[in-house]
Image (cartoon, rainbow, N blue to C red):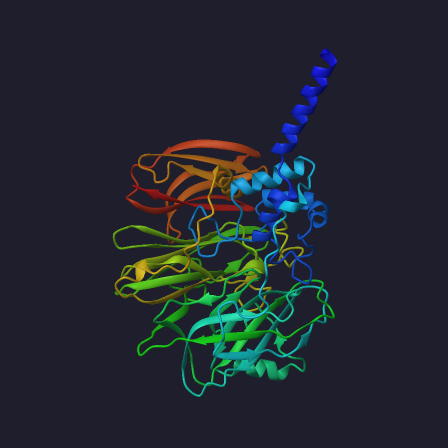
Length: 525
């Protein structure tokens, strides 16, 4: 009898343990179908599908590693800094379910509970377009990343205001991302004419600083749609220019994509602009002008720009760096010293750049100052570094050069704009794991923040060397040295400082070493 009870207890415990383990049919399929199969299905850009149970079990270890390190789904912006429209990242609960499923042996579950695969549209997601521009057919001829620009005349004899711009990839298996511009100078068309193949070789941009950014696309991105009464102006006789990134492994495959234009109707339409007031070109904007990145160094750069004396409405933001870029953020400080966080990318990836809209239109008071802080890693620690050994890098259009740009999507403010909702979908919840991951990625933790009198710094020294730490104002001027250059061994450190003498405002604490430069925003109150 005793043996029977023991066996029953073991059996009962096993059943409870198994019941608590998520299954593919009951749990994983829903997560994958909602967040992954837009790319991870046959014929699309991802390297493997995640549609069936066999697909998922074959990639179980890769999935677990990617979600635990926040590489997938690809969403570079830090949600702890600002919440943006159409976010694509997993909740801590979903990440935990994936870990429990993989660690629990990846059970299939009851196939009767398997949800239906979503129906993915092959045409427009927002209706019948007013105009369609067809891109030329192009066959990729290289096995590595292929950046290619294409030019299509708009055909508009007069200015045309657009409510929505929708990119439709011709071959979803190879189109990784696209940036969309208009150009009235004819320079891009001339570059196209000089190349015997369709389009012309891509640069860091489209080879013409006068071209105006109007949109972007990445797999899974929502169509770019403006609120009623606002429009993007396409000038008469403008060329539409698209910079494509075709993914590695596309050699021999062809693509012919198209753009859907939806006109904005109404007697009065407010123009929406895309400009980069924060840029590396203007010496009054970039504190460290000109943009020069020495070999074997990590460098931090600062930009600032005061807006004109009238209110604006911000709809979106698009940072831009090349391959040496490591981090970039953008925020505003109002005349009343309020901070408006726009975006922060703690691990810049040139291959995953995009245009990010805000969940609601943001009112920007007159004379607000825009700021950006970016770091550049021109060492062998940067696996994206195109030079080995590292070489000096300066600003320029080539992908091998560098940039520090932040584009903003904005219009003149009208009363009530701040109530316009761009994305009303439920927010993905954040958890302790997300905050911890961001702090670990940054290598520098500051608290309390905002700070009044005392500031505690927790940081990690990656390798023995000479390091210093200082507080800088938002334009990069040192206002307080926390510790001068000293030799420090690798490890974790915690120091406390008195900062009561600092005037109220926004500052950056910067930890600097030969191959390290980390800046974190601190608010002194």
